[in-house]
Length: 337
Image 1 (tube, rainbow, N blue to C red):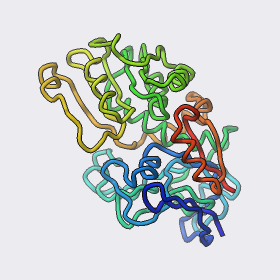
Image 2: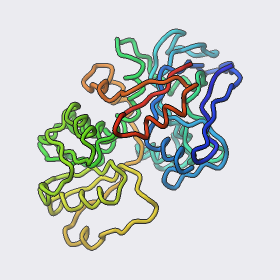
Image 3: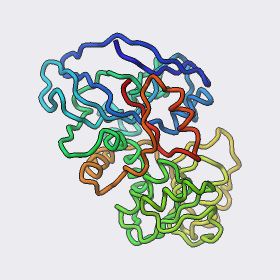
């Protein structure tokens, strides 16, 4: 048997025993290394939905994970029992228009673990054991922790956001929101050569974390940067943060929407028109997952400061409640037990 964290609706979380499954051909059974609680997981926990995706049946959340190979099915050759692996939660079809255009994160038939985007929902990683296709795993031999490896998915989101921002070499970049994705966006902007990365967040703890991972400056708000930044990444998922981004970018600048905003907000379309701003979305990641794995395994991206706590699956509710408390945590992870 294997423990799993299940969400049944808003604030309805349970820990259950699931039957251990055997891997089929091309499959690998993993024992969870670490599974990070993401903002979307918290939206599911609090509200029963994340943006436009609503829970319609009980499901296991979690899409940030590392694992240790427990057993392999017939034909598996790239990983061996006992190896640490990074786990890509995305399984695009590879043949739709988006996939053929190199934008597999927009796949029309995407199977993305731990998401309520499709129904029946695809179970995620908050369980002690799970099966994966071999192609979604990257073996890790370097001396990096399972907690760090589990950060590959959120780092890939930051990398994709910066890629959507266009050329940032030598640029001044604003990031609103210094949670996990905001801090990953700071790391990504640095890797892309930004000259200055300014972060704004009302939380003193969050601002300190942004500075720890390399932000040039961290402020409670972006008023001092009005009209002065080249690119703004909205990673807070708050209408006020979006307003800050739009006012901070220079004429002709670009705003990248990374965070999940409420369903209905006032939108300053005329300001975007008259200042000729680019406003683009960034959803999940594509090839950036592989980039994130390489950056973490080489420690070009040091994600260790972001990991606040690791709690066993048996204490899932305590872990979710801690993850909701921004005054005490940045990234909370679930581990076996």
